[in-house]
Image (cartoon, rainbow over all chains, first blue to last red; front, side, top):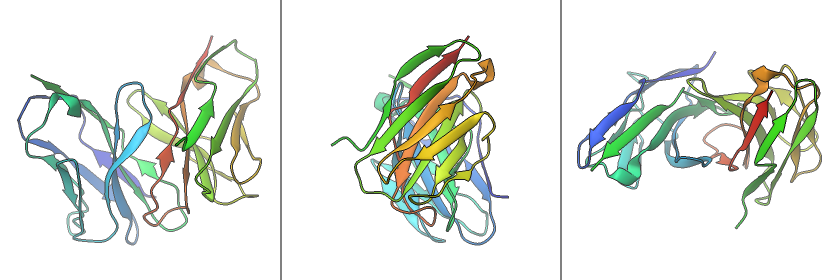
Amino acid sequence: GNSVTQMEGPVTLSEEAFLTINCTYTATGYPSLFWYVQYPGEGLQLLLKATKADDKGSNKGFEATYRKETTSFHLEKGSVQVSDSAVYFCALNQAGTALIFGKGTTLSVSS
Amino acid sequence: NAGVTQTPKFQVLKTGQSMTLQCAQDMNHNSMYWYRQDPGMGLRLIYYSASEGTTDKGEVPNGYNVSRLNKREFSLRLESAAPSQTSVYFCASSQRTGAGNTIYFGEGSWLTVV
């Protein structure tokens, strides 16, 4: 079945550092890929998504590129801020299926 | 601008008690979902409803029942609560199921079973 694997955290960075959170997936066919973010005490919010191979999703300085050849959708940001501290979830869905999540990666950014 | 609203936000139950988590969305979405979130496990799908009048099991349905009351509302019932059901529960909705449809989440319900 479909699955999502993302790097385990926590990831601890200093402000203005470069961020990469790895995500790989297993799926038949061509899934759509998502990154969601969860701030403390809140529900999940969509950060960005990509619906076909080679698409790049971007939002708030974050970006991720749908790589079919490596089945990956790594999240990157050039310069993180303290306010980016949160839990980040990689996820996928396909036609007729609900969203399947990775286990989440906690990011902590210090000033 | 309510989006997905779920109640209650916090609940403590004794083992064996029953309760219902309520969820409503005001976005005219067809599909609704219940997930649970546990430390180190990410979010796991309990049940979903692709459209009004249909419900399907997700990854972890045991111990739960759901009702799609109408297009807006999707409730989750614990008939006999167990400590293993201590978790944070999220209701969510989307226009359709799958294929790039963005899912919108409620703020969560923290349930403790003692």
